Amino acid sequence: MNEIKIGVQLFTLRDYIKNYEDTDKTFDFLKNELGVDVVQISAIGDFEVEKQAELVKKYGFDVCVTHKPWDRIINDTDRLIDEHILIGCKQIGLGCMPDEFRTDLAAVRRFVALANEAGKKMKAKGLTFAYHNHALEFARLEDGRTIMDVLIEETDPEVFFFIPDTYWIHMGGVNEADYLRKLKGRIKVCHFKDWKVTLGENVGSITELGCGNLDLDACYAACVDAGVSYIVYEQDINFAVDPLTSTAVSYKNLKQIHERNQ
Image 1 (cartoon, rainbow, N blue to C red):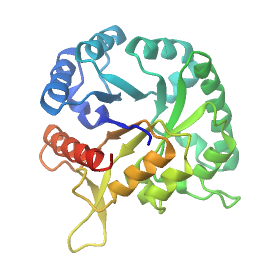
Image 2 (image 1 turned 90 degrees about the vertical axis):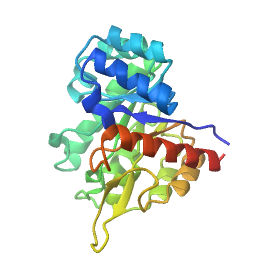
Image 3 (image 1 turned 90 degrees about the horizontal axis):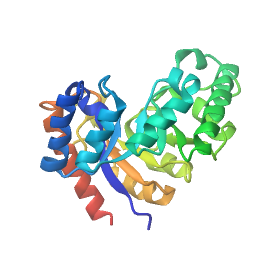
Image 4 (image 1 turned 60 degrees about the horizontal axis):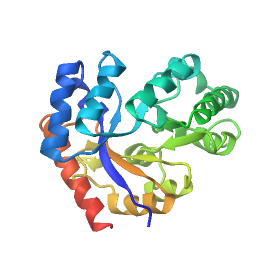
């Protein structure tokens, strides 16, 4: 069985990591109150990467992936690689493709070509590129395929990986667990995000892990089958109380999912 590590995507706590001092406090909360060992660094404040590395080392975090701007990924690749080496992170992630690449098949293929090229540079330095999906990638193109189909079929599997998101896969209209298995061998990090049906309404929204309707145990089993190394909790909005409390609830429930699926 593939051994999976669990952690927290820091975008969830973006309002608490805007500077060095606040990030230090937040890292202390994650490590010493919740027992978190793995983080994804996203939306961190604009302070020196050397200071970020200092905090990562101080708390002994395993940085599984990041989200970085597209412009830096393609135009500042070498320096971005050096920054990731400094924080001990081996995967550079993109949160979403820019709008210009979502218009038609030709546009998606332009994105694929640029991402493959950046991925090759990263691979040469021992890193990998990874793409995080939303629901928009399940839109159909003129040839009948979805954007995700093109990303899977036309990118180089040696240099282009995925950061699938359970909530957004669900919102894209496909089964989460089945789709994770479809990405077997191309996922190092998976985002666990829950979806809750609103009482009395035929709608749903993001919620704390274990408080919604997604079968996260089935997703966990699929992650094992797909060779996933990390599962991280993420929540963008709809916090039950505040992001810190929501993180505590979700991480506790993620640990329980992890433990009962060993």
